[in-house]
Image 1 (tube, rainbow, N blue to C red):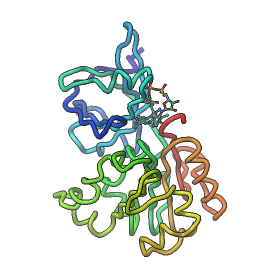
Image 2: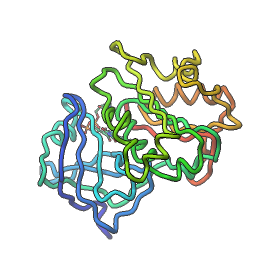
Image 3: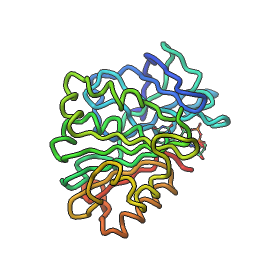
Length: 258
Ligand SMILES: Cc1cc2nc3c(=O)[nH]c(=O)nc-3n(C[C@H](O)[C@H](O)[C@H](O)COP(=O)(O)OP(=O)(O)OC[C@H]3O[C@@H](n4cnc5c(N)ncnc54)[C@H](O)[C@@H]3O)c2cc1C
């Protein structure tokens, strides 16, 4: 039987704060995935592989594989993974999978990407997929975090991506980034559920209210977050993708167990 994972060399690591870091590993040219997929990542611990699911941050045409990780103080993997350095080796699964793929969302007007915490990770790949801008008029990335310093990729999303050689023009016209902070003062505050229920999100963006006949969504975050946002969409008449490969008005993936 073929091995379920391989080793990959760490190229760089960046710490956002004491709760979050990003890192990249070398990508084998034969490694293929769809934007929005996740893969198992890990380390050898006591001579045994310790693996956890990680969404792939980098788009599927990038040369390296990038990840965004939480640091759980007593977490079996992340208490160790947060100390990796360039040149170290990590384990990487050979089979990327997942439900947050653009092909499982019906075409439509505006695509809403609702992320909390590290749930941002798969959408970093989705927003760099030119197919997203072919299929939708606007791509609205809503990222909810507790504290301002948890806004990983904020400077990239609010500025640098607009200068990207290939995506810049699409992104300037069609991508809307809406960061919101729940436990500190910030330009936008409040949970995504509140922003949806009060209509504040669409009012702030000057967009029409979410309409199941036109708008689509992808959701990634904790189980309670998925449940709450799904309930709001269900109530408004949005249909979840029933199975992988069958398109719906929205798709979900849990980014962690909490
Ligand atoms: C499909 C899928 C995709 C995932 N993608 C990512 C990702 O891109 N980045 C990432 O950091 N994690 C992701 N996770 C979570 C990841 O698999 C691990 O749980 C995480 O790396 C912590 O591992 P651990 O062994 O240190 O602690 P664990 O024993 O796995 O977790 C301990 C506790 O920490 C909390 N926790 C775990 N992960 C997170 C998180 N991401 N944010 C907030 N609290 C958390 C939970 O309460 C959990 O019970 C994903 C999980 C799934 C199921």
